[in-house]
Length: 291
Image 1: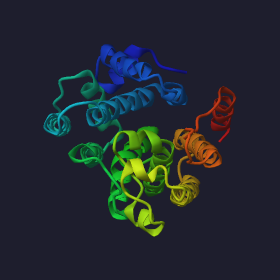
Image 2: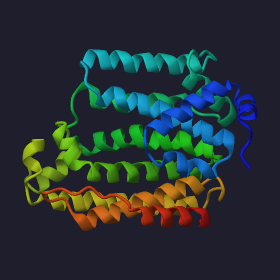
Image 3: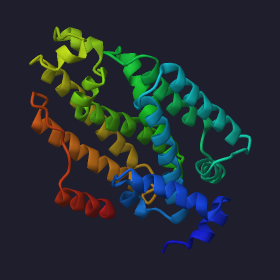
Image 4: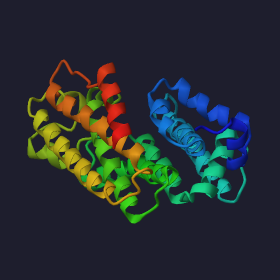
């Protein structure tokens, strides 16, 4: 049973308006994120809303129009806000809820800062054919760091849960890279590692590589890597608290299905981005409740 908003606000040490604000950010994003978080207790659900709001804001800074100098200034302002949060100081609704999360769920400052650093990697210069080490660092910052925070909000801070965040974060990010291939090229970005592109003699110029027939070989290798991370994440989930790990399992089921659908669609022009039908979303939801 969900708690009254006033009770949740008291537990989290914030106001009801703060909770309403972070939920509104999620609702306005028009994603299924809010629906997926319904299985959580009230305070954990609002904690995830606050984490989502933070990630949405810093991601928008990296993706929206603006000068590099302005974007870096805005990201630095968020680094400063995180530093202030860990000193107990906040001046925004998102910060108020995050402060409650930090105290209640023992969230680590370095994970928040890693997420901002990941956004900064997209700002300084468009990521084009990074080396393998840089790609892995990017995945850790923009995805696995989010996972490390989320898994603690879910209720498991064990070593096995950290491993789930490590592998599932990379699996999700690699899946997104494959699904967003054409969109990223349109932004002048190319997240495929240069070592793989060189192996198949593919240009690292985004608008050229997308037309190379051999790009499917690179995509298949990256898809296999994602599958391997899904498998390892699933193995570590077996060592975690069954109730706490349920949201992560639902996310894994959803993205594993998306990856399978994207592999079936392929990566040739005209590019088709994999998505789930309403029926598939219902099945995923039912499966999530049964795990």
